[in-house]
Image (tube, rainbow, N blue to C red; front, side):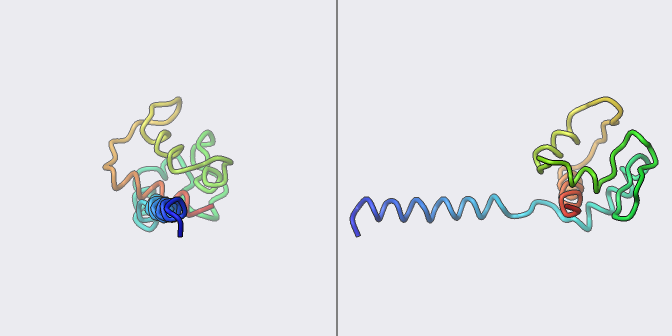
Length: 107
């Protein structure tokens, strides 16, 4: 192997390791469902099979999950940035991560 090929192979290995670490799921969907039922269910349909949210203006979690471009980052912003119609909740980081993991698990 040439020096260049060796360096390239090492770089690819490191990139794969970083990518794998970043791809690991954050949060526990089962715990997220429990938190969502306590905190979000007053306005949102939180489970599969619920076709409508209690608040007609609040999308169902299934619809949120199916929204094109919906990512962990997009949900994090939605849960941490005040916006019309969405009350601000004081969630612990783990609770927020669990809710996000649950929503993404519905896709």
